[in-house]
Image (cartoon, one colour):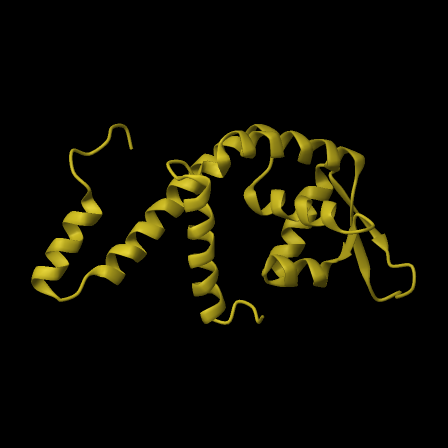
Length: 166
């Protein structure tokens, strides 16, 4: 979008919804979440692109960097990233092609392959992290307290839909 609209289109849609269909609070909230997702994704993609990363690949590198040994089985990566095994394979393939991770045999389970972050992967992750944190991951306009409240509210929705237990 090139320039801001002179009105809030979601508020306008909510009013029309209210007039024609009924209560609009949920519709307006969901439409707002979807729009903010577009804004955040665009900002994060823009920050990561110069580093040759997508958000999915960035998340995978972060996950591996958090692992005690810098390596995890692909199955565990899929569980933690909440992705289908095919998606994890595609992400790892791209990261491996770029030299940011490597596949290594599991030391005790011959059926399992580990994905290990490389030194180049650590370096790229460090630079990419500077880029996304410099833009607050694209989530602008909120105080730190409001950001925490937003996270708490979104966590409630995720928990209620069975995203996690506990």
